[in-house]
Image (cartoon, rainbow, N blue to C red; front, side, top):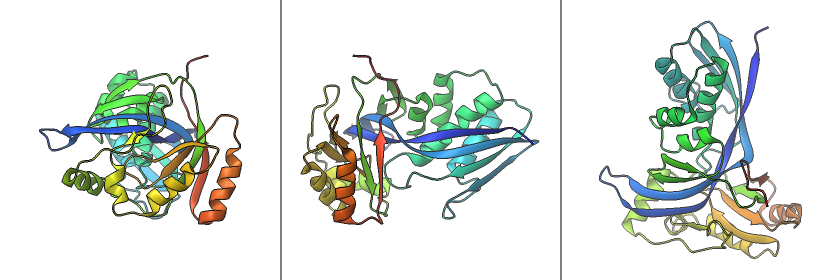
Length: 282
């Protein structure tokens, strides 16, 4: 039986997302601090003689050349000379259209896994540059740690966090289209409200006012979390629709979690999470 490789593709949250203006290429100039979290998709890999094959636990997602997983494998085999192909199974855990980078993380994980499986000598930096051809969020996930991301998001500065946090992540079951969020922001540019100062970053998301203007569930949940005594602060991640709450150290996040499910229903997607990556020693 052929060897199987299992890899996790972590979701991310944005602790800070500032829109600095419009670029000549039509995209927005960004500065955002993103952190990988313990919520993750699972990908399994098996070598095959040639070509790419893919299956997925989520029947709503395509298992063909339109999927970022497939695109990443295609890009790898087109770029590097290796003898063989790959069979990939994606076990989807991260909601899509949620501002959590699930598809981008899957794509980055494919590149990292294929580098190892086929023992290709290429640096993280080179792999990040390659991955930017598929999307501006993908290079962040190559580094597997917190990072400031600038430009369209493809300029990456990995950092070590001053401290780690835990929290609760919730998703309403609907997606917020990222292009719509930026277009709506551009029609009426306004800053997101400043939140708690964590010492290394102040929570803020400039896309919140635009998204809140249409999707009332998101600010309602954010305010509810902010009213809980255990919660440091709450914010929408990326362009939405997921909302996260950071919990004070030593507090019982399970109590807040249970309270949320009692208030909003236990059929909504809700998970406990922790930060992943490198942290400075105190």
